[in-house]
Image 1 (cartoon, rainbow, N blue to C red):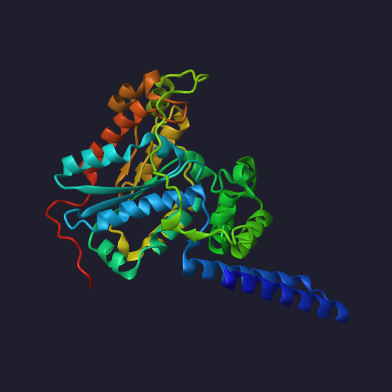
Image 2 (cartoon, rainbow, N blue to C red):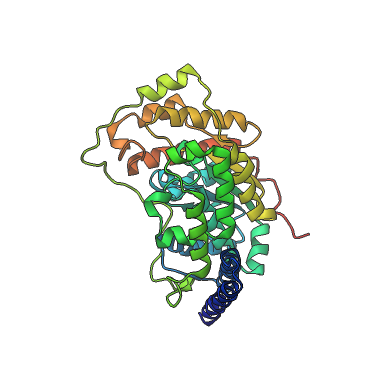
Length: 380
């Protein structure tokens, strides 16, 4: 805390000195003051990362839970294959990681570890930051252990988040959660993604403006609200798993059935893809994990929205060279075509999650490129 406070006070003193000097000379001080603020923000953020202190937020609790899971998997020499799962609320409610891992292990004939990093209302940039923070907790020895595993990154395909890079921002703007993930690097990547999506579409999807991202990046760097109450991930009082089942549907929910989904899939229309996903989202995650990962794969969780189903199928067709599992399977849709399988239009119930998780494990077991005969990697 002393380091961050010192940097903040130094920045403020420097900014005031620059401002006074510029006023005496009749010049403009704003550009210099902004530059100093940005520099200090980066320095404070780096200092906090080096000490790995965090605020007690839902994302931090998710990291605490999955850090313990990951370390248990790393310490188990009999477990060779790991899947790190990315996602928002659909897999948080609809992917039962325990069931998924058990069936996948049975089908592959060897144990598979699941690290489910899914969180409700988490856009792609919040997820990236959660992965970054999870990896930052590993020491050199643990990273080397991770290199010995067959590590697969399983990324969610979801039309809503792919079409709106900063989805959910307005819902949680100026909160601990938004400040936490919008550091300078993430904010810059978000600006680039919004420019690719287009200003009109970004506004239509309640996306932030550039000034919003800059403001959040500055606060993220200074961490004014979090100074004095941050702690290590392991010391947080609570954790949060990536699977939080919904045991029953909402009282006001009327299940629409899945016939519209089937009809739209039969029309075989190809919706447009989001270019930023391939140019920014996926490459950033692959660069973050670097040589730790063996394979990047994709999956989609069922919803009752027809356009989400056609988007997932079109995405998988575009990425035919990768493992990509969409849910345009008549047998799966038939099993899920019951009110008891759904909590609302976008989220599976606990029963639906069990059915889908079993099905997904079977599909992945048939398509994953790793085999039981492959040796684990050795350090170079």
